[in-house]
Length: 432
Image (cartoon, rainbow, N blue to C red; front, side, top):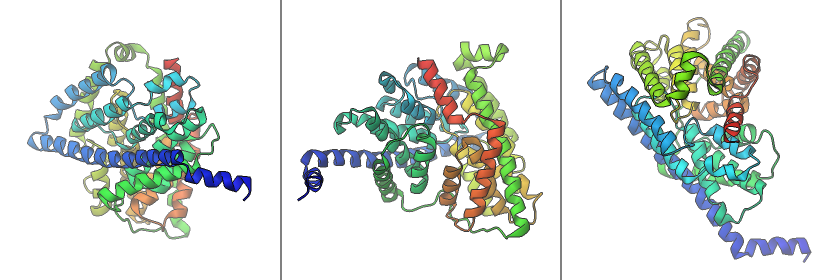
């Protein structure tokens, strides 16, 4: 037998190698199960808040300022490192040259805080999502397994982090292909590594866990719509351009906020972060009243309602959700922008559908969802695959791809920096 074949056979039969595989597979399954439990908790938290609103529409003026203040206090004094989306921290962990910084970006303590404080934020009506936090949670779990895996080389540890993050995306959205593409497009932009097997295995096992617990569901159900050739493609250009402009603007504002504002507001934000968060909660309560209580939470229910029953109650929803998500993120509480961005895109589609009446409203909404999402993240492949898998629609593959690419190009003009990469660089600068 050739030496290479004998070595391969020895690796296959090695008890230590099988132990490493079992540890890794167990970690991926754990990521999937936690993602499902996190999703269930997020739904319960949002339902609790809406029950409070049903009791009195004025209760958010008490719940939101006090709840936001508590969230920020917890992230600064108990679960430091759990603020924000979680994706910038994961990218920062992949880029840092100081391995001593990894524990302040990824750990089981941070993962626990991320779950608990994000659920608290949703229970207070924050316009945040759970998908971005699930990325950091998945990366933290897999990174914590390094002590059992025997991985000591930097590239091996990075492989674990990328695999955990990809598993988090796949389980959070139940979109396995999007998890793989997200790992390649967003997390692996600046370094090469041979971790395809790790990523694929983690996504498969996390997906198995999610499917076992929730079944093979689609995030927004099945959306049966298509785009006629010819003049219908005019909608692709319009949606792509508008999504790129507003998505790039959103990213630019978040990056500007992370650099710190000047004047009295910026000084108050730096000196009194808990009070500033309370003020943001008050602003969000006002936006909630003005929007007819539609800007609270992830926006998941609003998007489903628009796709299933039409847009009669959602005039102006897009801009209101845009502002609510911006204020929520700037406040310093934990929470992601994936689901709220899709809701903003759907709201844009509602407004645009009245101008492009020759295209079905469902088609316009799906196109604006992918356009705005691609404009915010500047990750066009991830954007169109996530929306395609979440709506179980394969008739719009080419229009979705074209819209995402147009939005990405326009967004780069409005905001030359990639949002998550820019925020990750600022995390690293603060630590150093």
